[in-house]
Picture (cartoon, rainbow, N blue to C red):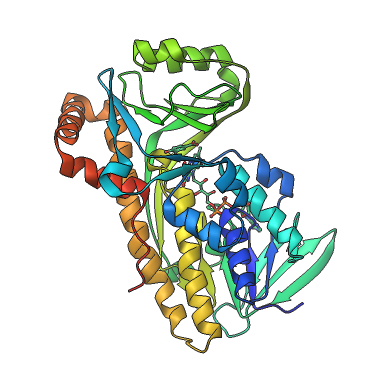
Length: 391
Ligand code: FAD
Ligand code: DHB
């Protein structure tokens, strides 16, 4: 089979890229190693920046998000048992949208099916070839039969553990990484959120986050040890730990219920440079990871898609050089989001290995933050998302 862009991975970056390319008349196929249900079963991001919302609208997949998503004007940080609100809208004029990654993916899958665009799920032994030439290809096995897709470009949208980045010769790529000494234990439950807005909590027992998916579905996280196992956390143990990290009046409002999902995620900062290798481009988690504290991972994946869509539109409109800018444009925004996510992670978590000095620095930074409109504006600007610049 021949196409223009072969997209590896049907996560949010692969599906959004496919939809935008199709809108521009650029043929594409999505090749995914898992089933559609498996992809939808992964509970991940919950907060969308305005740029992500705009791209979803441009892709024509925003009607349910616009009807059911919850625009938020602010976010809270809790320190020393005190809740402080950051007025995102007042400080930046922008909002964020609470709408789950699962729902974004579901909407993208439905639009792809409705448009009759080709998608291969449960593809085995996916491999990328010839991306240092003008004729790259992707091969895979489906039901035991080998297939080959010849394309002009390969978009590596296959996440952190995918095959695309792993196929780049070691000498052509530089990888920057920081692994954090803890994880996040997350619970999803059909209970009303403890508060209208998200609350990020710094506590001596460890970080906690009160998030939500809707007025009747909540998502909560607690910082946990890297050795923790999900099986060792009963629902009761989770709710008790969360309650212990919240201020008493907030804990008193917490509605608990059976978990419908419970998982542990490790925290990592990672960037691969560059993001383009001839005719192969890395997009989203395939090229970079942020710790989840600033809610940036899915949003960065979306901004990569925005840059690559622009580059490929340029290429097919006769401006071949547009492709040369993809890596540098995307990385300029990625590094700023990496900085913000690292900073929020460093501020909000418990790092016993940093001693009392490290703890005092966190307190001083928090006190400064809440005393300074400039510092709160800096946080707000980053949280709502930096603009997509194309120079
Ligand atoms: P993925 O979602 O990882 O998709 C990659 C796809 O490629 C997968 O479907 C995978 O099966 C497929 N694949 C892998 N290997 C192959 C192969 N060899 N061949 C074919 N297909 C392959 N981000 C935010 O912006 N806001 C948040 O609030 C937020 N919260 C998070 C909370 C948690 C607990 C976690 C874990 C992440 C969170 N993120 C958040 C990050 C966000 O979920 C990711 O950044 C996002 O999923 C990246 O999308 P992607 O499409 O690039 O990669
Ligand atoms: C969620 C996850 C995050 O990492 C974050 O910063 C905010 C919200 C969530 O899953 O809802």
